[in-house]
Image 1 (cartoon, rainbow, N blue to C red):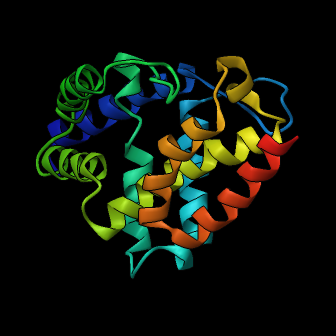
Image 2 (image 1 turned 180 degrees about the vertical axis):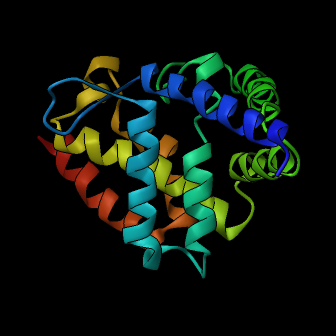
Amino acid sequence: MPVETLEKQLNFLREIDRLKSVIRQSPLLDSSRKENSAEHSWHLAMYALILSEYANGPVNTARVIQMLMLHDIVEIDVGDFPIHGGASSEVQAELEDTAAQRLFGLLPQPQNDAFLSLWREFEDAKTDDAAFAKALDRFQPLLINVFTGGGTWKESGVLLDQVMSRYGPLIERGAPQLWAVCERWVAEHFSR
């Protein structure tokens, strides 16, 4: 293996350490603090490992985990865009794509192209693997909001119809059984 390849890989690994400093809106379940994006990615990988049987169709769990480990790396450059933050999805997509090109561009080929391709597949959510990964990315914060008494929903004044429209379609498409559980949780939460 050429020394240049290893140097690029190690440089990338040093750069992504910065993901630990990106603070998300979601709290930990014990509400002691906000989670960071690296914790979020790790937790989603565990969700995929544990919940893959609930995907809407057969999925390659290893690929789903890879997508989930890569999906928020762009936040190193652009920060977290909360689902209830009101940011333009077009602007967000453009900023994140630029960040993905820069960050994955730190890697040697073929890793650069492979990781960028996986990241874009996740963003497009057209394959079964990506649809399930996207579902988990919506499911985890929904679970956190429900089990922290409203969490970011309360902070942002989020209403029932907003939860249903912002979370429902992606979770239901990638993991309909998980969405059925979510519907029950959300109904119970908003009936209090």
